[in-house]
Image (cartoon, rainbow, N blue to C red; front, side, top):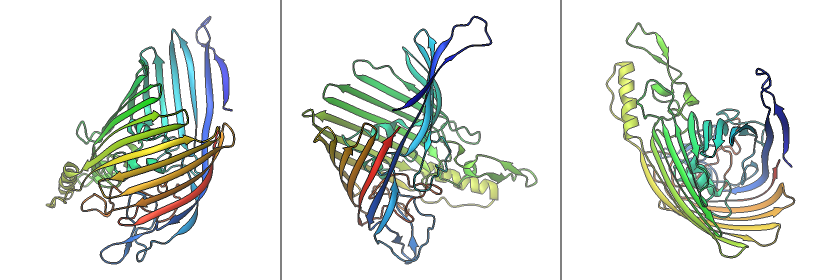
Length: 439
């Protein structure tokens, strides 16, 4: 049971002021398990040297020798649910108005660490809620990620890897965000979000994010749709906006501080710089009280032409040397999703999912979830990823390919499986068991 602390918040600065009821709740989810992973290794490049490629971003060594598509047994965190913890609270301000706050961060069980992007990278916002809906200010989940996780009846982190496979969610959380949630109207609701770039040396739209989602639920029918666009995003460590310092050649060589790495929207921890756009839509329908069917479509595209020209111009401005524009990298892909959920018994839930992309890749996923209690679930999951060549031209990181098991695979200290990647032109698979506990 969630544990809440209830208190009467006295406004001591004003004698005789009315007291308001407030609450703070500590919450969290822990997902820990074991996985047997086949063909999840490193691809070789044209010179024969091993190079970590794909969308997994799990390797700290980019040049391991030779191709490696071997198999291994691994401890694994967050294969279905995201291990996290946080605090949320609300205060009744009277007249139907409430003040809310939310803080959430990662709790990785593999090493006891958190995420390198920040203690509360999953959420850090405060908001006001009333009959008008809710306004939120601060770090928030990208609405397209929220929608993506609800496309099919039984999903989880592995199946929701479609968001990174197609590249429509390079970042799952938006910093510097202004969000608005509408009230529910006859089963319909919507969320709008805008994230500022918080940098002075870029255009007004460079590095900003605009996202929205809409959803409808009535009886046996659920409809879900979303859109997101990141404008002129920079790749980590490249361009003046992402450097810790840059030489100011207009003076005597003094060093002037500029954007700080992943502190803003312009410089997220990502391997792609440029415009990133995503769309998705899905429908779920309960055929019977125990059987629910789902169909979905998702689209992701990226174009770093303008970004690359900007990097070349900045290099020329800071070094004084002429540069030649680097070839732009573009990708554009679609995916079609189908899934079924079957509540076999009050405690046993079965899920079967299939995803196919226009990059000639597909994923097959089967899940069994057994409810040990209202808060604890044991699960078995089997996934096969049949990956094609990928769609990102001119890069060793092809979009359109799937990891055989999802979850937290960011850089240290959150790293899980060294050199595990979504390997092109390879069939990969993973079989795992785990336990999810919510508190």
